[in-house]
Length: 221
Image (cartoon, rainbow, N blue to C red):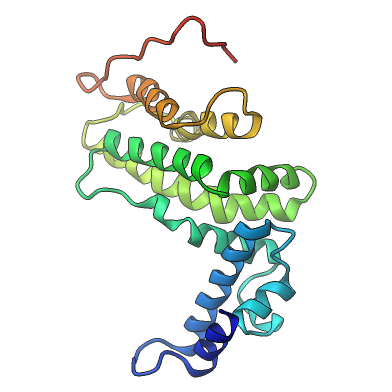
C-alpha cells in the first residue's frame, strides 16, 4: 500500500491532466493518517508513521499542517466523510434526522467511537488535541448543521427565535454524552427518539412532531 502511494506521489496520476503532484501528496498523507488513526489511535499516527505510509518526507507534512494532531484529525475526518451524506432536497428536520442517525451509526458501528473517546480524554490535558478536535472535527460538522438550521428558519420549517449555538448543542450533545459515559445504549432507537424530542422543541408552529413518551422505568441522567 505504501509502495503504491509512493508511486502516486512520485509520478502523479498517469494519463490524466489537471491534478498537480502536490494534490496527490496531500491525498496520500490524509489517507495514511486516517488509516493509522483507525488502526491505533493518535498514538499510532506519528509523523514518522504517516510519512512512511504516505511515501513522503516529514517536511512535506509540516508544509500543510502545523502538528501531527492536526493532520491526524483531518485524515480521520476524511475517512469518516460518508457520515456527512445528505439526501437532495431534504427538509431541515429530515436533514437533521439523517445527521443524528449517521453520527450514532459511526460511533456505535465502527472503531470511530472508541477513537473519539480516547481523543476526548487526551484533549483534557493536551491543548493541541483539543484545538485539532475543535477545528478539524466539531467546527466543520457544526458549520454544516448550522447552515441546515438557517435554511430551515428561512423556509419556515424551524422557529425563527432559535439560539443557533444552543440548538447545535441540543442536537449533538446527547450523542457524545452516551458515547463518553456509556450509561445508556447508543443505538438507532436512541437516535430516533433524541432527534424527535429536539425537533418537537425547535420546529416552527404547524411543523411540530408528536413527542415520544419515555418509558418510566428508564433511568433519568
